[in-house]
Amino acid sequence: MIRLVLALCAMVIPIGAAAQHHGHSPYAGRESREIKSLSEADLDDLRAGRGWGLALAAELNGVPGPAHLLELKEQIGLTPAQVTTLEALFARMKAEAQEAGRRFIAAEAAIEDAFRGRSLTPEHLRHLIGDAAEARAQLRFVHLTRHLDTLPVLTAEQIARYNDLRGYKAGDPCSNVPAGHDAEMWRRHNNCR
Picture (cartoon, rainbow, N blue to C red):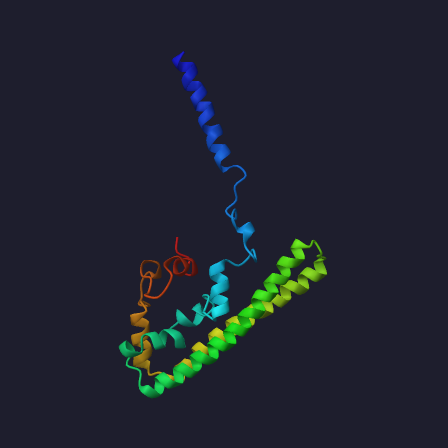
């Protein structure tokens, strides 16, 4: 009798475990999003002109952006003239990024609408994807160019100090999330496990 009960338990437990995982997707819950490919946090970042991780190629290679430079202006020792220049760069970047973000959101919304309406052909889809890719590329260009624009404004010592303050020393970026960064996003962008 005990063997029968143990045998039945051995059969039921795997079936129950399989049932818990069957039919569930890591995307479950996202079907209620306005634009399925963009979270509310993504939309907020894009509308606000925030970096959205698009300038990591510059940031993590020692080319600071105006937003974080301004946050750390005292610690870096920026002069009033440098602050004025960086504020102008930041204002320009934000305005351009907000406009590019709106275009990217609209392009993603167009893809979303086409799938909702089942009105797609491969040619139309290719066009919509091209629009979205172009909008995203423009958004990334805006952020990366403002990083380039900071280099002539700064001294080598200020850049080194910035990188030190941001935690970009040699070592594991996964164990050192700089102040001001969302830890989850930082780890995702740095391919941390």
